[in-house]
Length: 198
Image 1 (tube, rainbow, N blue to C red):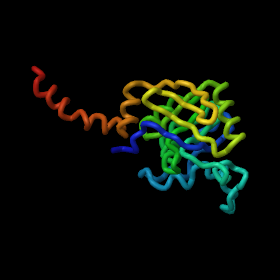
Image 2 (image 1 turned 120 degrees about the vertical axis):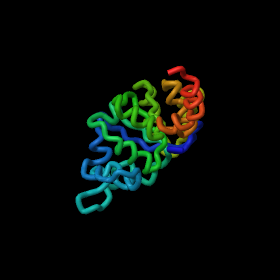
Image 3 (image 1 turned 90 degrees about the vertical axis):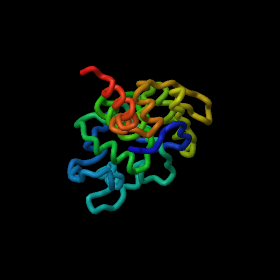
Image 4 (image 1 turned 180 degrees about the vertical axis):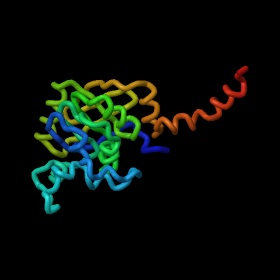
């Protein structure tokens, strides 16, 4: 299994109300030398979380102890810039299982779906509601139901549907990446190959 199965996620959220966050800000280029998906979480937003002397920047949301949870709520156009998978590895390794935004860069969105982080794209109006709820109560709970493709603000009951392809939805539900999917279909593929006249 490539990553954790995703079905229903009920958790609080960490707000990052900044637009146009690119992948170099998510994981700076100097941390891209590793080839395994390990240890990236500690360098997530490294230059925003820490000063040059490695002391923490307390005002940054990930360093603020009033925020926690497995959902990162981000501003518009999250994940723009270069197509590095390491950005999503860092998000996953840090402990986030979903990122919410009103717009994602396409390559970043696809990387999320291949690595086990659910990208939930909502309307700009609903994103404002989510940020407002977190500002009102940082311990607010949110529910992401992959089966019915719905994001809900538990305290208010407000919800919105989100889109995901049936293929990626199935993979997320099973914890599969593309290779796992093919391995799971091995018997069917072999049967088809054996029955092929060519």
